[in-house]
Length: 176
Image 1 (cartoon, rainbow, N blue to C red):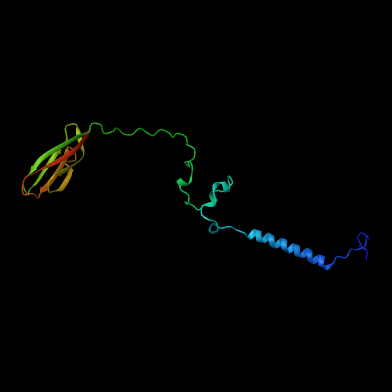
Image 2 (image 1 turned 120 degrees about the horizontal axis):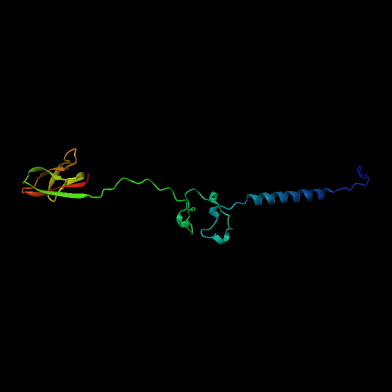
């Protein structure tokens, strides 16, 4: 029977040839899907078997790593961006505390007694801080500025020793 488009006789295709073409198409399809399904996971890779030589430059990016899984030790060089421009100079701070004077005022506390005394700042200075101390068993129930004018540091100390002790009040004074 002639081909209606060209008028040439039609060729007859045998059934085995069609089956062969269909089988080849199926095999190619299966091979492609099998290749696409092949995924290698970390569990399948032996530890220390992949080296930097196995990776191409730029082959890994931040998306390939879990957040915070890399440490500075994982990098050959310091990871840091370029230095920024110099900032503006800050304002000048207040005058410092030049002229500090440390005053120590010793006293004797009678056996098992209590005493109050003051470490007085020199004229032209005012107290900044202070305290009291003793090398023996004593309690310091009060330690505070002597007055609102800042004239010194007041201390009250009680001794629990059965003999007189030496104790100290001290004041840190600064030019007024």
